[in-house]
Image 1 (cartoon, one colour):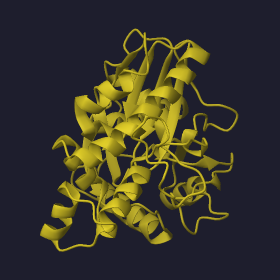
Image 2 (cartoon, one colour):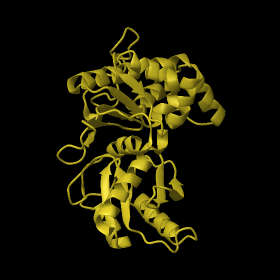
Image 3 (cartoon, rainbow, N blue to C red):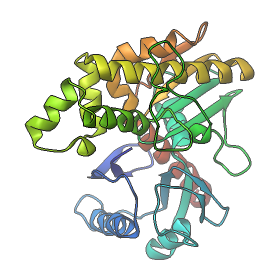
Image 4 (cartoon, rainbow, N blue to C red):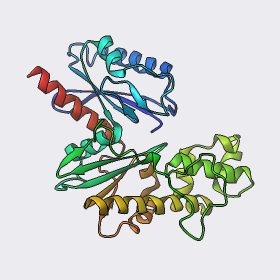
Length: 310
């Protein structure tokens, strides 16, 4: 997403303290330094001063080596040959767990939410600035060979050529289309720059910003307000998301599809668009919503801490 969430939890999964670092789209070394300083501040706070830090659990997009160095993560800048696991372990002197953020979101919903209760096989699609997926097969999270199964963000998709009202006449800036909210926003920015009327143009004029400065938040607000152009673009994306979900669900014979990420800000209308293309499956948002990833990280950290301390 666009916000970094940090929390401290006890061995009963209770959140003791939480901090947020907002509007981080490209994660740079200076952002990592801010995270470390925020963690130091939290550890030294009145709430945590008499407590021992047993484990740090990190949820991250991308692919990592076993050593904790990134193999692939376009949103992280300047992290070549840098092991997040080692840096945090050396800095704070404790165990560090680093896992895929979408896998952890599914783990969090499974452990603490209701959307996956009594479900053995499920697919979670993460749709936000980027896209990803997680799989639960026979009651267990399937992580793949490197712990990052489900990287659908690199599927080559003709996103807007799926209906008569397609946008395939547009020359999208990337060499392949994706179903991320950022991709939809890029199309809408271009349309507004070319003179399209509607919610986003009025929003930009009211805020005194250029179309290139429009945000995902503004786009989701426009969708909920029923703006025709925004609904057209996002519903086109929803049709493709539904088709991708249906194909994966049929291939693996899963029962439930959970949509996670900022996409849940689009509400029930978007869920209905996706559901129409995933016949015979339950399609829903996680009960925990934006807290699913956070609670998954808590659960992973607790598991590691219990193994090493008890």
